[in-house]
Length: 259
Ligand SMILES: NC(=O)c1ccc[n+]([C@@H]2O[C@H](COP(=O)([O-])OP(=O)(O)OC[C@H]3O[C@@H](n4cnc5c(N)ncnc54)[C@H](O)[C@@H]3O)[C@@H](O)[C@H]2O)c1
Image 1 (cartoon, rainbow, N blue to C red):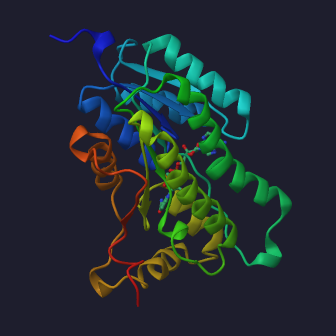
Image 2 (cartoon, rainbow, N blue to C red):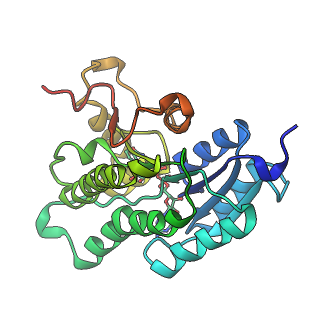
């Protein structure tokens, strides 16, 4: 039987969130030791509880992606806990929408810090510890591939994350470290509920229906489940996916395929 210290180690940033929590659980089911990092301390403890009580196989670490020192501290904590890092998933993020005139400097800084800057500096801090076979997955968005009217700021952050992914994939390929972006359309998580409540006026359900009204499936359109995302992320990180690097992988029911 493999000892605990031989098991692969995954770090999921945003692991208290809708997608991150299920991604973390999926890696745990596959036998990884999993560290979960997030700003949300309550959700963080709940997420790590889901992974089981064994402190050798599950770790919760506070993280503020807006802060370089916090990114570095998280990686240091994971390495001192597990001695290795094999998978890094950037699954934290924030959504803000509104026409360009309405975007404040504070909104700009928040979205760029969490969605782009933090993802970069978490990767940077992990680099000395990643070995051949390691895999990085950045959860970008369909909004990182095509424009989304009324969401220029979010699109800029996710478009930046996609090209950051591609550039790093080339830089790290000689070390046999893979870097990919996953670009889902709407996923049923608390983020969608936040969007509907915050921007749906007095009709949050109508907001959600409008999101799906752009889908080519018509009346059969639905949100992606976090489980569908998590299974795909786990596949991307598996050895069978060795040729996949530098990719912006769409998972969007064809929403970005064209008109
Ligand atoms: N839900 C969707 O429809 C959808 C679609 C495409 C892409 N995405 C992206 O997928 C990722 C996961 O989104 P989700 O739907 O699970 O959202 P979510 O809101 O459920 O979770 C996001 C997590 O990020 C954490 N976070 C926010 N700011 C942080 C910070 N400063 N430091 C550390 N953690 C912070 C939150 O605490 C939360 O736990 C995000 O990057 C999001 O932009 C979401």
